[in-house]
Length: 96
Image 1 (cartoon, one colour):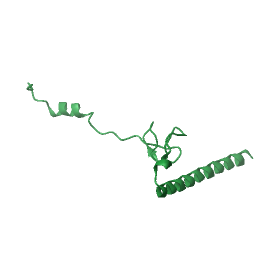
Image 2 (tube, rainbow, N blue to C red):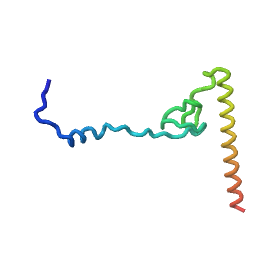
Image 3 (tube, rainbow, N blue to C red):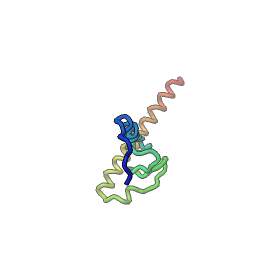
Image 4 (cartoon, rainbow, N blue to C red):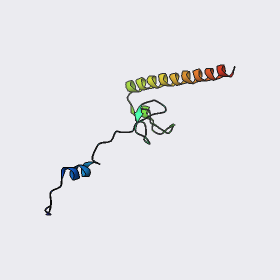
């Protein structure tokens, strides 16, 4: 086993450890359900990736959980439809 020839100073020790700090995770929002997910990953909540449904999440759930999830999904879809309609109405009003 090797034995150090000289003692490392606190500054040298700190410079070596400067890259050991934890970095904050960069989260993004799922386009379909709005949950926070890691970038470039499948959404665990709705099973979509880049706007396409990859995994049918509802098939894996029990009946009670499936109903609750579908209800949440419908409510979220209706909110988006209302937001798009409101944005369309504002564009029409601005043209007049």
